[in-house]
Image (cartoon, rainbow, N blue to C red; front, top):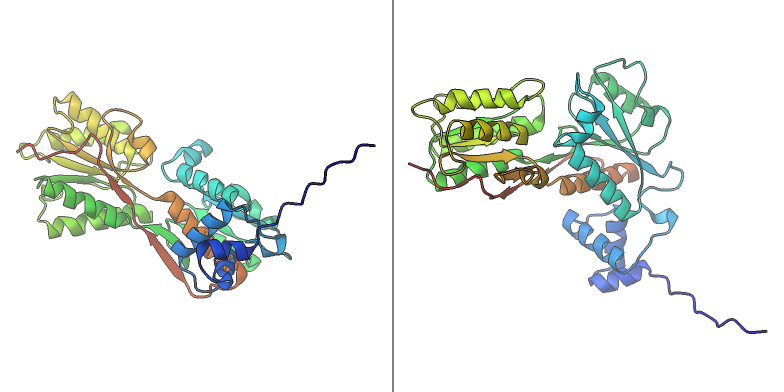
Length: 353
């Protein structure tokens, strides 16, 4: 009989190894991985990254979601009135949030569910994730959270954190800082007549975007054509044709704007299309900024300079807070703001005048 060579059992990586690698106390690592104690978000992310790199895998009892629970968290999309599922998952918000949520859950070994709910329809029944007791807590994406939906959460005692919409516990994009920074950059390039397109102010990101533009316009004495260069909302479809028609109306003016900041990529594409139809070169004659993702900004020519929301960081903050609510370590209302990035591409340059 041939003896089978003995293979030593691989040494299990423990929390002590993570602490040694990071140069911190074991209690600090424990607090970071379990969401307890006072560890900054940045430190927590650093320690989780080190734990993953050296192959640390927490025991089931020490994972984010504890025993005596379902072991699952969820992401709930609030469907806007009149929209379909394609709108939900292909939007400039829901799509990046979905991919960020799934990516972070997979990275951290978290079990998760996704669900869509319309607060504009029949609310006689709660969302399936709540009614079925399938999750210990939820991240919520989308505006228009109704009082009935809030009461469902209270009745069923399910903690939740909202993403890019205000609530007691929320992670928001500081879009006002992004639009203000874009105005400042354009002013530095010599622009003084600057237009702005936004979106329905019922959504926090659009409200903040306009707030930041107005604040910077006052500070830098921007000429908005007595308000003629500002358009808050193109309607439910935010149609390309509507954006193009608005762009035509202001670009025909003798004192037309030399730059426009758009609250979405679709509006920006409509503006660029119309400007080029009228013989204007983007960016030589008209500079354009757009709020959106790098993928959408680079999906067609010209590559758009953009104000890019940090969705992975937003979702990460949301997960961190949700863990604290589930564990009972987060008791006071909390709002985390995530600063967007200003990325310069091909659609912005010096003022032509």
